[in-house]
Length: 333
Ligand code: NAD
Ligand code: TDX
Image: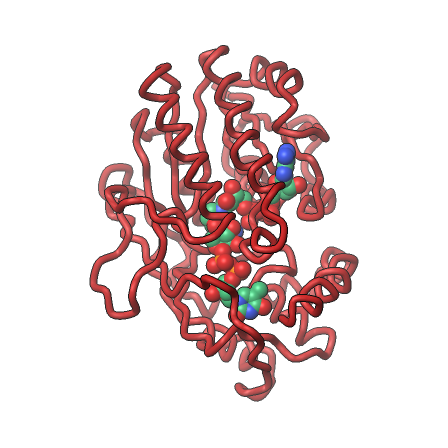
């Protein structure tokens, strides 16, 4: 039977990809609740069928609005967050409000109305790994977040876990690695470098660029979340990753090559304070228990598709580009 799914943060990068994924792969109806901060974009939901997708402008901290929308939904999938580490180092307050108080507001309403809740989180809650560490993150890895962003995501995960145990909240949690794909804000690493090249600026690498991220395509994140919503065990945490470890220098050189530039046509800029060295996900629980597998096996091909998307969708990203770069310039990045 078709469900009504409330997607918070559905106008952001991963949330909007999930809404497109739901419309294409299920009969469900979707209500998007989004505050349309600098990171939310109406254009990311353009072209979706109006009889399947309703967009509500509002804040997840607004208890009355949240209560009404959750009462009207069957399932809540919670993506809304302040999501950028660099921003959290300069102005942490919105991260506490949205990531902690916003999540608290949602789980209180989900508990009141006894609704299925899925919480979207990040591998950054586990801190970082040495480059040569043979271990990868699992759901048993102790929490050890480094930044204001990741500590507020860790706090929100712990709230959800406590609400499951103390109040019987019908919730699952997923912690995913770095996503790439269409509709990602130009403040993030991959879109920033692609759009710098498109506007004729040099890409910017933090420090030596030896930091490793474990890349997954946003569509694979969406298929994993849908699988967990449908078959995940209540109270469980599933790590989502696609064995995509690459260091930043390697990713940047690949982007330059795919865009017909010399591989060394970039600048080193000041490093991020407290910069996590390496993330790596062991997704075997999700693969073995729920039978999930990623569709994107070839990172270079996914990257080429992503570059093509930014080439073809300049009106989507152009309005955000100058303000984003002005902010980075102030930070020496
Ligand atoms: P994003 O910044 O692109 O989108 C966030 C969305 O949330 C925006 O549309 C914004 O308007 C909305 N929002 C912010 N505050 C709100 C509030 N108070 N009320 C309602 N809406 C609000 O972020 P993203 O990269 O798409 O990340 C989405 C989620 O996935 C986050 O929870 C993030 O922690 C998690 N995550 C992201 C990654 C990644 O690689 N980007 C990886 C793992 C997990
Ligand atoms: O210009 C840049 N140059 C650069 O070298 C930028 C913007 C980033 N970097 C580096 C920093 C990181 O090592 O690239 C890597 C990726 O940076 P981000 O895109 O800012 O992502 P990260 O900090 O790894 O966090 C992302 O993945 C986990 C998301 O933003 C989070 O929301 C998610 O939880």
